[in-house]
Length: 85
Image (cartoon, rainbow, N blue to C red; front, side):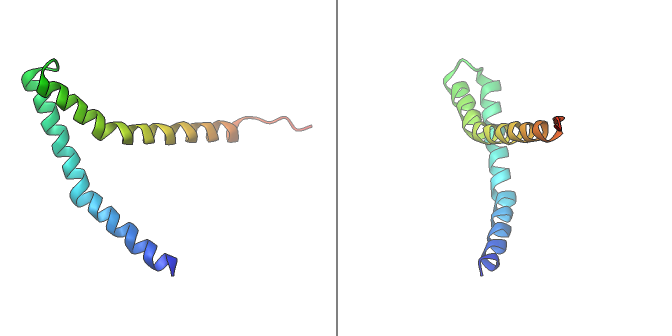
């Protein structure tokens, strides 16, 4: 029963991410970079744009970094030569 709910839920969440999430994040990035480029980083709109970029891309970037770090750690432990006694 769990799988019957899980698969449609993942499909719906993926659809929602593609249809609404990615375009929204792209729009925020475009507006933020436009504000920084137009007024400079040392302005109220520039600081707001930089803050929006950090808030939008910081948590996913931190997550991707953590996954990559752990994958590299696991790969090193698997590929490390062991001494058989």
